[in-house]
Length: 206
Image (cartoon, rainbow, N blue to C red; front, side, top):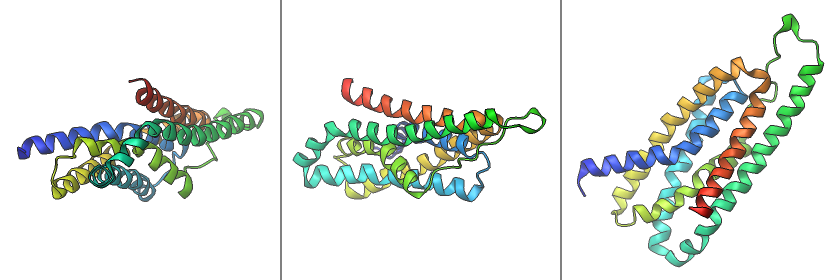
């Protein structure tokens, strides 16, 4: 394969696969506008690792257990939907509860109170990582003709692209989170549930 074409294809795959992770990162940034750089890097790093490992897992499954891999593909959109509806719904309910409390409380100088829910914990972050990357298993079919080294390099490129895009999403989420602090968790929950529905609709009907 032409080297330039290989890198272009890998970068394009990375951008396409990272869009869901970008949206979740945006939601996380909205939810935690005071997030520091170390935490931003750790969150983006989780998404990056999952997006790197999933295509590689799919690649090896195609080569070692193609029948099993093919049998689980129809369930991927449903798994992603369930996971994202769970964490998105949880965030949405927490956001609504916080909004009501803030609305009933006295707010100093007429300014809306900042969100106190905080960003995702370790377990929630793992669920987000799996939910936004599980559809990348199907990329195993796309890179099935690659040599092992090429498949590893392509997956690493996808991971790096995801890291950069997720950091941008977190940064953007933080920016708007500062301005929309009272509504941040609600917006984040809506984004997560919307992503779950988008993955499900695309996977089931298209």
